[in-house]
Length: 378
Image (cartoon, rainbow, N blue to C red; front, side, top):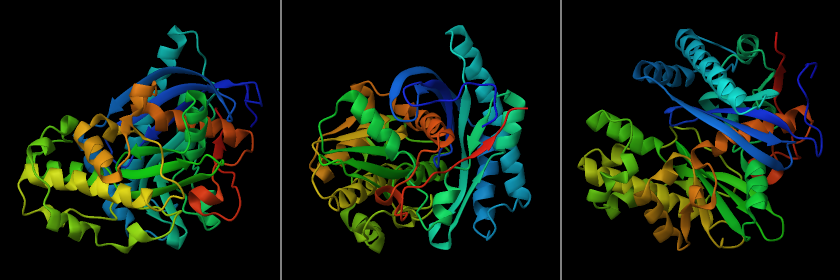
């Protein structure tokens, strides 16, 4: 990395700005983290920029168009337009957070940029994230590390989840008792298992918020069910839930990963909004419990982060389905809404140091894999 900005070294952390736009497509999360890519020294300011409805519409169009891709670099019209929008939003977010950081006396050294996943098919060695890292670097004046999944997928890995190595550092900093599971409840649910013997494992368990968000958007035009208030009024239809759970994915060995649209909510379309949301929340919980059952040891607790951690109805379903205490990461001092953004700052530091981002137990890749592409600042 040929930049005038400081580069992280072992024991010499730098401020890294992480960016995340997840499968729920609610907006861009951004967070600053002081790290050397192995440990966490401190946390800095955060920022969230919600997507406007027209921006979400453009990304939904890109999701549909991306299903026909066989070349991850192709940008047919809908993808090109969505990539422009995604990049513009991230430029705005970086500038806003850099201004916040300046007020706190913090200077970001580099940016970790996830982009927006529009298609993920690791069985075809194909994963597509849109977002122009080179333009982001040029417009913000900061080196940008992006495209962090591609090397893993090209080597036969699942390319997801990428966050487990950060979860490990977070758990160590918090002194969590092992074994423990950190559950990231975004559009898709994924878990990181930290074993008492040092085992690091991770995989996608099933849907988290995506099905519920899509369902309520179709029925009421809402972006999501705030704190599960509507689902709380409904009842779970067990026969419908059994149909949703009738999928070989849940019993398949891990590591494994999912595309955002791997499941659909057609089974609940005949239900009321309340009952449909309650049943979909139970589906997220039951599929997560199926994942927990595949682990070598039952965790002492489940720590939830991501948007779903703000949904007490969902957390209640998870605790009941798993038979394990489920708590929101915020109760332990985690910035639950910004854990993934922090993770991409952490991964950026690892990337420039040549440290692995993925591991056999997290993505199924044969050996620990480095990843990321550097776009130098102009």
